[in-house]
Length: 130
Image 1 (cartoon, rainbow, N blue to C red):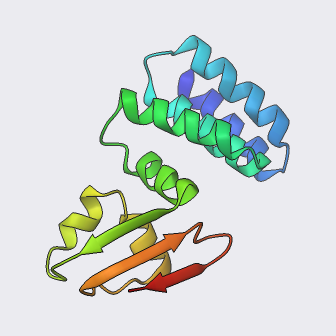
Image 2 (image 1 turned 90 degrees about the horizontal axis):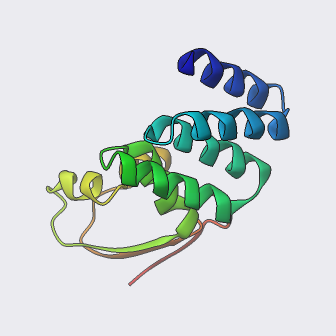
């Protein structure tokens, strides 16, 4: 069953058996090509393996299949880096629409007026404001 296999893949990830988890998630993607969750899981496994290119590709496929997949949107945003213009701190939903809800939660961002640039925030924490 799809959920049991997905759970098994995550168990392998937790045990640092990333390559085995990738194989499980690849199987899920091939068996359920129209399901967003296996692509998201495969993206997570590739990210853990350090393969950002394949992680992004699988997260983007997941988003294509389910445009409301906030987890995949957030991961693509984080992996690609981002730049945004915030004009009204009260419009918190603009962060959510831009797929920034996870970043905002992770870094406790304040919704400030001005431009905020984040470049690979989880790895470099290279932040500048203008």
